[in-house]
Image (cartoon, rainbow, N blue to C red; front, side):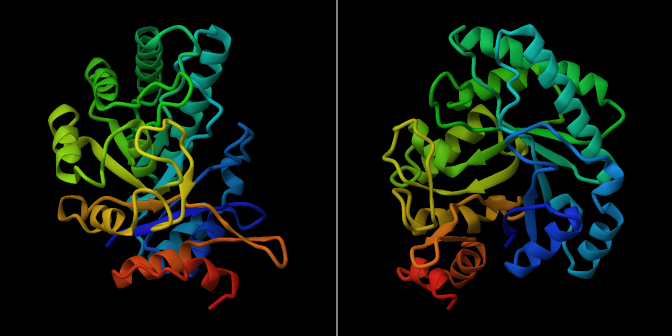
Length: 300
């Protein structure tokens, strides 16, 4: 079972600290941002503690191919503003090069929002941006996994056909897909009542060979809400049984499954507590724990 979570890389320990955080959750894979997800500031590569990270990955038997990078949310390849789109192309190119130097194989990218131009124009912009990024990083073997989106606002990629149009037109084996359970459910794919049908449709339209990462998140919203609000595992509208089924599906055994579930607020101290150690333990047990939130707050 490849199961892990988003981890940080703040402070002086950087990627070394990322591995230690993942290990503290009993994870064997993880996802990290190379800087804050809300901005595009990046420290020099020499400060990321890459040799120390590699030593720790070896020590704890974590395959570096199971370490996933996520691009920041604020870059948007789909938009019409040429200056901003060129900035996004330049920045993602730099991120891919950083991934290559660190030894990472996959970076997850939100396709972007067309901001009123229409879906076709948005897809055209994404395609041209991805082609340029791939050309500028042709010396690397880093894959770009475009994420399934919930469909809020003018997001591109809220259905499998839109993602496949991007993949087909870019026409590169380096373009992969990140399947987000919350986003896919919120966009209208009924994982709960039509689990087999949803994945059959994914395989038919996109193909399992393109699937590189799975984000495992419950949803605070109902099917088709197009709102994208994550819930802790088993405490949303997808539920523990369906999410556990995704994680243990033999077709996806080789794929990193990453939790992006919300931190839990301790009402007594106002401290935000990471849920991942507890959720991973619950997932590994195969049994839903209805007291999970209380256990996190009480450090049980």
